[in-house]
Length: 406
Image (tube, rainbow, N blue to C red; front, side):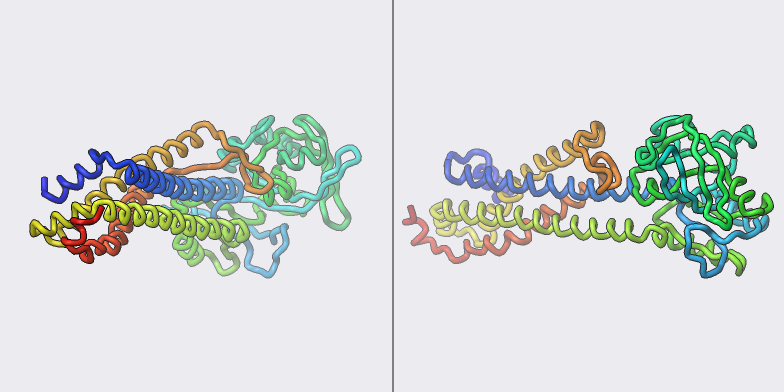
């Protein structure tokens, strides 16, 4: 053990001075709260991004392949399925699955209530994993009986609440075309994604219903829905897939289709960065105050050490070691606070949210080990670097005046 670390240990853990102890405790609490809030901020932002992204991905996929035209309506322009293109997309190593779909606008009527919706038509190859995780009541569409499947319909909890629907109810959808064509359906399932852009707009039915309404052949669809294995590579994979498509087709990504949601998620990143800077400033200011008070309180000791030939840097190291011990205690308590609260919320969902505003009913958290480690290292490094400046006050203390200082 070096001389500086030995003296610092004695000052930190065996000091009997009451005033400096109070200041030290305040500094430790400041670092604890700062690190705890930083950990929770990153965990909540990461949790929000993951949950909302997975909700949108689950319902609409990561990418959509549609006909290359100027149509910007909810009802996609139809095209004939291309076996070669489908084989390329399914065999792509970055693609998890690909399913055909089509959409058609309509008005749901039940009793005296009506609601405008978009019917999303899917077939037996559709991946129901996400919808099953969001099921509130009932089941998904059963394609074992193709005739019965045409009359089955899934609606969101939002639509069910507006029309006062429940599983088993029969409704009529008037599809927007000339002349309007009504079709009867039976509600087989109610889901809740908590994404209002989805829940208030879409219902799910059989793809063949849309094909018959449009007098189309079974090989005519509105587009392909794709999900990739690694969302972080979305832009790269989108470029690769787009380059392999025939000229009659084009690709859109989830970021383009739900730009308002992803823009909001980027704002969350900015908010988290501002929170990190503010909390780090709180920790640094607390430590600067504590260090200055400890230096002033130990002025006599500094004067004696200087009279004995100790260099300014050696004395500075004593107080920097002292500060590092205090910062370490604050970081330990901050980790317990931040990670502890994060894990508590992760497993209990104790803190709730308004789903209509935040797309979910609870505060989501995702604690990343790398984030916690980097926050600890960054806080320690920044505090120590900043504390070098106030520690230079030691060089201005003269032995004669310091020894006489009371």
